[in-house]
Image (cartoon, rainbow, N blue to C red):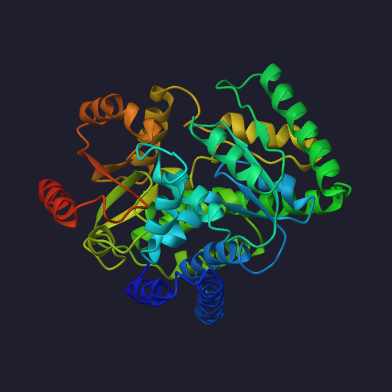
Amino acid sequence: MSKKSVAYGKFVRFFWNKPTVALNLLTLGLKLENTRRKVVATTRNDFSSWVDFAALSIVASAFSGEEVALVNLFFPSEIMAGFALKSVSAEGLSGMLAAMHLEDFALARAESIGVSKNTCSFHRAGLGLNLLNMMKNVRAVAVTNMLCDGNVPIFRTIASLYGLKLIVLDVPRNLDEFNVDYVSQQLEQAVYELENQLNRRFDWKKFEEQMKIESEIFEALRELYPKLCEKPIKMHLYQHVNLLYTIHVRPDFHLLKAVRALERDLKAETSDDAKRILWMHLSPYYDNVLNEIFSKDSPHTVVASELCWDWLDWRIDVRRGFKSIAEKLLLNPLLNDARKRAEFAVKLAKDFRVNGVIHFNQFGCKQSSGSIELIKGVFDELKIPFLSLDGDCVDHTSSSSEQFKTRVQAFLEMIE
């Protein structure tokens, strides 16, 4: 997500008409950058460096030859851990292409088979990347229908490219005992189908190990939450995206190291007078003016991102296994109606004592734009300034940097 990524993308673009060479260069670039981030994380041993490394490690594994499962952001990675598969999300792969300004190849490939330009660019680019035969060892494709009605048809097409059956979790909107059992039974069925597809047994020990790692991660974050609200860690805007991606797709020992470093960082962090911003939904993956405005050294700092904390009400119970995972999915505050989402956003805004809220509306995403007026009305009643930004997180040609800059700067002047 830096100028280095764009420069390397230009180099790869030069060889794009030679698919094998382009893929090898892409793989090499990810490997080198992942190694660099590991060195930085090990040397600095701070929260944001470990998060940056963890996020890229997920994407890089898709090109390393490891056995991977392509999932959407909300499919429970614990299931894939039980099969020793590395979960990689299509959203993250689309973001990787966007960071190097290579997303146009994937978007064009998806559109060439009839996928509408009105479809979310995350899904178009994710499908296009697979149509370009860039993935090395996809062994499973799985998705939930949470928040997005475009997930299932796109992922079904992706699964068909590899001759795989798509695993779909139907997640109801309300939490009750019946729905917990309903989702839990689907998880059992998913395991059965994957056992047949992979011709291997589900490893309960690996599954429980993953649950225990997550338990340690999330309990530590929950304990540190009040301190974070009081003294937020300074992070670049894009690092909040890295965090939410890691939390949802593969919260493993890299994230655990990040959380352990966070406690030390909080002891050293000093309070400052920066204006506090709550970020809702996502932000562009490519290098853009928003990352400049909301850098960690900016007088206006993003202190929390909605999707980094949507697990907050979930308490892991390793003994209850699938039922505990079902509760995680059903407890997500974005799953229910818009008012519940607004209530959750208000909680974050109050806890972090923010000076303003910015909601980024991803083109083609009904979930992110459909509830804007209600959410804005709630924050208006609380007299918390609210800005709604329209743009594209993946297609860097669809958004205007100057428009972002003008609107955001006017908003920030208002909260001074």
